[in-house]
Amino acid sequence: MKLKAIALAIGVAAALTLSQGAWAQMKISISVAQNSHQGIAIDTLAKEVEKRTNGRIKIQPFYSGSLGGERESIEAVQLGTQELTFTSTGPVPNFVPEARILDIPFLFRDKAHARAVLDGPIGQEMLAKFEAKGFKALAWGENGVRHMTNNKRAVNAPEDLKGLKMRTMENPVHIAAYKGFGIVTTPMAFPEVFTALQQGTVDGQENPLSVIMAAKFEQVQKHLSLTGHVYSPAIFLMNKAAFDKLSAADKQVFLDAAKEAVKANRARVDEDDAKGVAELRSKGMQVIDVDKAKFVSALGPVNAEFEKQFGKANIDRIRAVK
Ligand code: EAX
Picture 1 (cartoon, protein in one colour):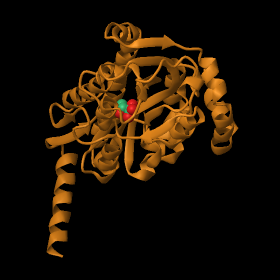
Picture 2: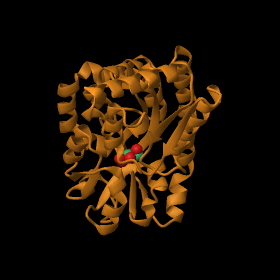
Picture 3: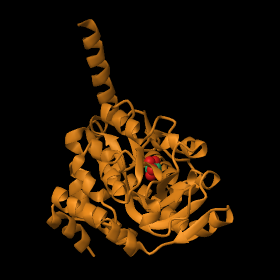
Picture 4: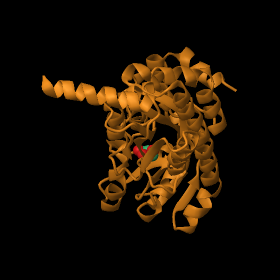
């Protein structure tokens, strides 16, 4: 009983100090390196929060999966053992199933369309759904448009994917879709991917150019096909209790700082996309531009399933956004 009373007292004291604006140290994590589109996102968030609270709230960044993969980090935020994470939506459907619709291959025309959806009513409605699961979703960010890499062969058309052993995110929609290409899927946390590729445990993986460059996958992957098969959102997640403890003014600080951070994150993705192909070619990757229409039609049967699962009207509502 005594322990419970002490824990309660500590909790109340923490709540009081935070709400009265005493100094607070928080943690945020990403699974990729600091020099990346995700690194600039969390560094900007930390800088903006510290600046806007006159140093009262400091956020300590952890890069390269040093606190664990994305799924572990999301779990830690849900439990409150770390206050924040910036993550792709890969593992998110395991926590907020409603978010799965965003992972449908070829759902978004391009980054501009995806950003319009996420920053508009559909995306904002989706952010609200995180609260029931113990998260305050501060803002949508961007991981990028995903492409296929492998060490076996050039992938010019969907049939070239058949039988390739590819690492996937722990995402049920991606796994179902990639099986539709005939891929042998191996779900795996991101921090294990480089070694798995190096050792040949898997033949390939798929990720945006920003991630391929940040993770230096050109060192362990020969072929890159610009399939653009999935737009991968990212998201700032905060432990809801930690957010709720903040004063109204500090809550607004976090929301405004996240918006600034997403601007920097998206700008870095645009930079990476502009120079990534040339950079990866110069580092020895064999890069192929493909006829995306062939990959879209190869997923016909799977898409019929997705329309049943998510409702054709819901998918059309996303596609209709200008
Ligand atoms: O968020 O797991 C993945 O492939 C993600 O794209 C990566 O962790 C960056």
